[in-house]
Length: 333
Ligand SMILES: Nc1nc2c(ncn2[C@@H]2O[C@H](COP(=O)(O)OP(=O)(O)O)[C@@H](O)[C@H]2O)c(=O)[nH]1
Ligand SMILES: [Mg+2]
Ligand SMILES: [Zn+2]
Image 1 (cartoon, rainbow, N blue to C red):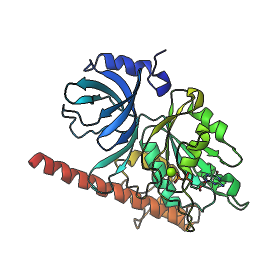
Image 2 (tube, protein in one colour; image 1 turned 90 degrees about the vertical axis):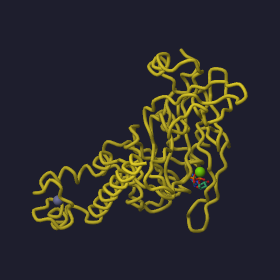
Image 3 (cartoon, helix red, strand yellow; image 1 turned 30 degrees about the horizontal axis):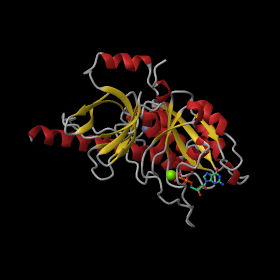
Image 4 (cartoon, protein in one colour; image 1 turned 60 degrees about the vertical axis):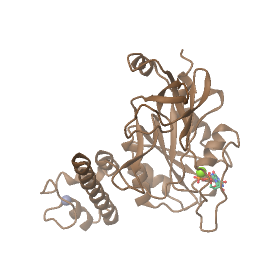
């Protein structure tokens, strides 16, 4: 058993490393600050400079990355290599729309968190699900604050019937329901990343899992929106080395990035019907012989859901065009 197994190092990955560039020490990034990161290694956590003198190209280290670190005279410890990522949680960069922003890497599960105290906003949930599935990790729906749910709240049933292949866990930090199951879902050496809007209870859930008040939990404002408290993305070890959790700051904007396939999975029911449309590139807005619009007309399909789907398809097409323009600019330069 290697020393870093509880941090997610598999035999396959460590073998891959030996054949790699090589002489550095292997570790996993557990926290990223401006210009520096914490890397856990066999000999404990090392503070390193995240900018290598060896040009890393465009890749910056992200929490979850496996890296090689090296001591350089006059400079200190630096990351010399970022290992290939098995999964990538990312969105479109909110500041620069033509680039991808990576939020976390090498995670096994992505938990989409929704608070049962508030009504479901389908468009938001669908975006989060697309991001979760697109990461390559296993998506999970986590419904928090079950102690505050009123009896008319049908969110859980709706989600279970819409997303049959995705596990739904109902939790509460007050009566502790679902916490054990969630920890069991993670398991030794596996990483769960939590995504969701601010105030849904991500940090509180991490705290409850850790059994420790490690992360500051925000007060809920009157408008029901939690304050943005979590600013670092830190990979944390559960007690008894039972698994790893990664909290992310509430995502105000969640632009999709190269997620066509994941989008098709989230709207799998519509995709199935769409094979009956006359045109292969049917947008289900106005085309003749559109099976989806026929479903809307006979009441079997929710028109709003179709509209949201069409919007996301259009958004991804726009992102692709922007990206292609960006690439051609880079080539000319
Ligand atoms: N009653 C109840 N409140 C919760 C639960 N989980 C979180 N909260 C509260 O929701 C608020 C926002 O939680 P926080 O973890 O900061 O949300 P985050 O922005 O997603 O990290 C805090 O006041 C928490 O105490 C829960 O299971 N039950
Ligand atoms: Mg938080
Ligand atoms: Zn159609």
